[in-house]
Length: 397
Image 1 (cartoon, rainbow, N blue to C red):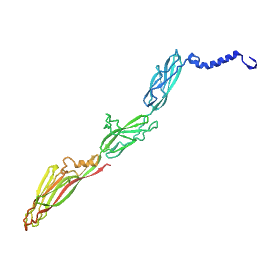
Image 2 (cartoon, helix red, strand yellow; image 1 turned 90 degrees about the vertical axis):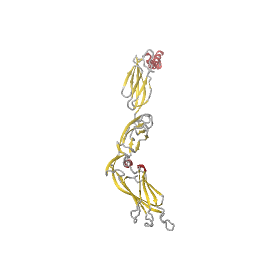
Image 3 (cartoon, rainbow, N blue to C red; image 1 turned 90 degrees about the horizontal axis):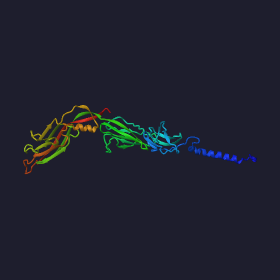
């Protein structure tokens, strides 16, 4: 050792070699086996890094390498969900059934026992969870509200809600009646007007396109009504003046609101000015119900010169009678009334009635000072109908 604490040259060289070795050994370990077997270099990529729950991902580590004179003999895969596998080839696939973020690790091992690992991250999107609130049975004309606003996205994103309102109708005409988008929005209301069993579906879609679908069923029941037929008399009165040869026609529809049962009509003429001296006036009364093929005519007569001439007609049994009170079901009051008033075999007289009054004998009468004192006559027509009118009230509401 030199004075002053210095080192001889050979000692300094040994120290320098030791320092150099300390730096080189880690670098040479993978090539020379110093400190352990030579290590491969692992590389991996996934064909998809974002999927929906239940889908699979392919992982490829075939670009991994190993130092010269060594080969990779196997791969160990850990998928981050507690499952793992081993393969000889650097390729595998895995299905992720549940939502979450998963780190996948592959470890490549060569024939010298060297190892290296690479990782990839996969984001698994969860499917929305549908919450649907709605009745299972209603009556026609009631409002049904279907509420899917309680549906949730596991990731907390916004949801889009689509309704298929009728599986019996292919509204988009694509050949599949179960995938229509008839309405949108978390809450939908509608009013069924026809009874029957309805079915459809609601589909909820999250921001990443994952969707869930749920079917729904709804029984729409008809309404129940009590029907009571009430007998009423409807009276019509008309009057006027006709000269000989003139005709007056009246048109009306008396059977629109009920079932006609009996008709009674009387045409009365005013008393002639000189009933003892002049020929009596005579008119004809014709009724014509064209839709039902009924037409008949009567003529006035004066049985007693102290009374006005008149003519009457009557017809009963125009339609069959009905039991007084009973219950019926229908989708609506309007539908029930239409069926009651248009019942086959009980529709006589629902169309137009024509009353035709003709002055057949009114002129000439015996002249006084060359003047006809009675050139025509006043008339009055009274028509009465006996009508059964249905009174309907809903029961069981």
